[in-house]
Image 1 (cartoon, rainbow, N blue to C red):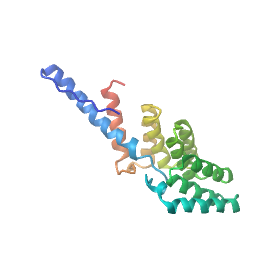
Image 2: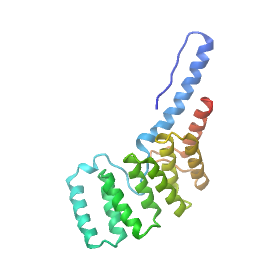
Image 3: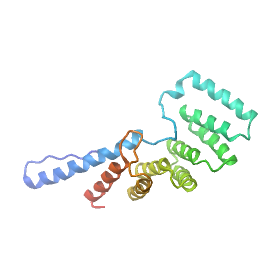
Image 4: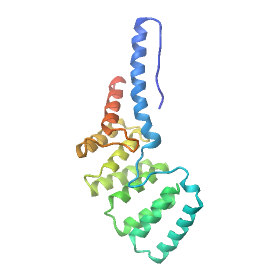
Length: 199
């Protein structure tokens, strides 16, 4: 998302430049969520995790475990989580799907699968997964936060993102992103950005 800055010499266009500067400030607040704040449940995402030999060995062990216990949803979840941390998007999705076929009522797994869908360039599938998590657990914050991020940055639906984040604040007015930024701050910035652009 681009920052907009304008500086001009006469007073009329200086005012316009000031407006653009304010817009750029709010865009800057919103854009940070795109790079770092799609939030998994209970884990941090590590860009280097997939490169560790230990994790690759762990995934191999977990694949053997699910072959021995194919009807155990927890084994599939652990495998999905390991593939998640290794940035193996499709394998993570497949493992989560196996777990959810056995136990479809786990909102956290739906949310983590939604993150994997988003990272594998399937934003609409991500939205469906986040919606399912919220349906299962009406108090589930992370699924709604992530839904807003995908709506805003992948589907360019700022109004949908606003609705998603407003729903988060109904659940928890103090909700924050993984960066520590408050959802309320993000929501206000997005609304002001829309007003400044005349939307």
